[in-house]
Image: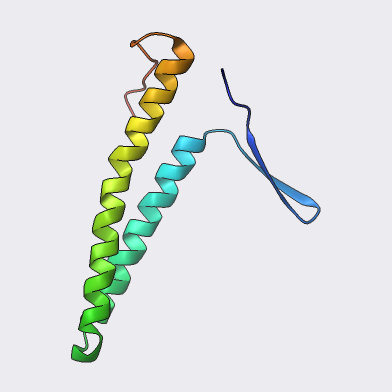
Length: 93
């Protein structure tokens, strides 16, 4: 069973996402960077240290999401291919 592209309608425009796992991985990487940047800035002031700590925790959780996305992709490709020898690229995200 293969899935077609994901189409999101925004008014009269539409966004077509063909490589869902790659897009999810890129989005996750952006979130990791945002959490750690915001957390770092919040550590400049003693008053915002607790919020900074929460941002670092969120970033750490996002780091866990990355291998879970890769595992989900691998399972999905295995189901599509019908064997354990799913197609992989050397630049796996």
